[in-house]
Image (cartoon, rainbow, N blue to C red; front, side, top):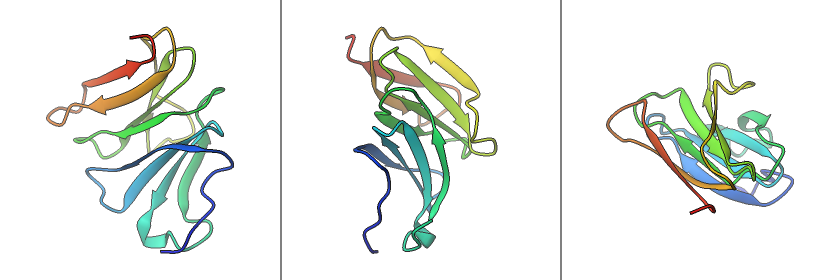
Length: 123
């Protein structure tokens, strides 16, 4: 695998999908997430989708373990994180604001497709 310029700023998180072994995602300080297919990673345009997910730095990306289409991103200073559907990756399907500052981690329940937890710098 050759080196590739993935983002225009720091990459804060890289995660593989549990349900699609060819897919991984990155979250970056350039406010974008990118979805990548490792089968085409040597191609300079190998990302499947790129989207501006936030007005702030994007700190985390997490894939749903049971639903291959769902993933979440977070990191906004506002405390918001978003749920996305890969079939409609341009717009988030849910905007969740449960923190008072940046979201630093999102983890999906490995046994159900509708439960996740998050942590943030607000304690």
